[in-house]
Image (cartoon, rainbow, N blue to C red):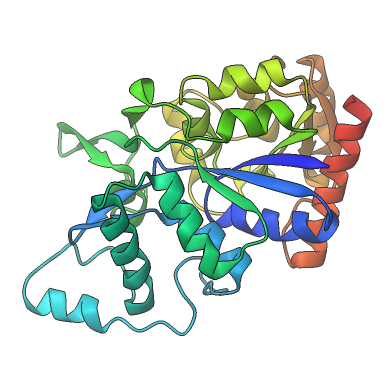
Amino acid sequence: MRIVVLAGGIGGARFLRGLKQAAPDAEITVVGNTGDDIHLFGLKVCPDLDTVMYTLGGGINEEQGWGRTDESFTVKEELAAYGVGPEWFGLGDRDFATHVVRTQMLGAGYPLSAVTEALCARWQPGVRLLPMSDDRVETHVAIEVDGEQRAVHFQEYWVKLRASVDAKAIVPVGAEAAKPAPGVLDAIAEADVILFPPSNPVVSVGTILAVPGIREAIVAAGAPVVGLSPIVGDAPVRGMADKVLAAVGVESTAAAVARNYGSELLGGWLVDTVDAGAVADVEAAGIRCRAVPLMMTDVDATAAMAREALALAEELR
């Protein structure tokens, strides 16, 4: 079975770990969000790609879900002593090494897809990890502070500001001119199943879909497309997805997120059992829906979610 997963960071990575357990013989291609990418200290940082790579490769800090295990922050502290920021973004010493290698390879002319493949050669994540695009795309957030409107990088909004102010608009800068990375469209065309994990529907999966050609390829592929709701009980399972959903005019409910994806794109949708009342609403929008446990409390629970998604895909087939 060939499975394509459109993934963000923590939620996508943890879902993939369960999917690998649920379908150990499947060929899994992950199309990773690069809209969160940022240049810091002269280095190219790809948070979502790295979170998938570290999580599946056994190097992730399990408690926080991002960054490396057994991490230290000597370089960050030394940079701060020189007055070099930003101090709000915590790159650890082990993590720095990944970004140094990536930046050197990019500087030597290698595209991001080739660099990602080279990095994965060390971590052996057990999936084919592709960036959504080799082109530079960065998500920015329009906000208003003290009556002044300005745009900030998504990382500043999410990490520094902790989404403490309302987002007025979400803009994936550069997406309209970007092209899918090599292998992305082929993987989608050849997929038996396409999955949207419980990643952020606006700034993770939504940003991937903003790259011209990817949404169209999914619609044209004919493979069943099943998503898992990141909203449980009208609240995000993790993070502050409600803030960015509000910015695009979508309610923070499992049914509203499904309707926002739309029946042209989405064939099936899983909601948590606490949202079983939303099933009829989703199905009225032309999307087949089931209510199952959706809390990724451990790998076994996540694998059960993945099996439910694959079962629903089989129904759609």
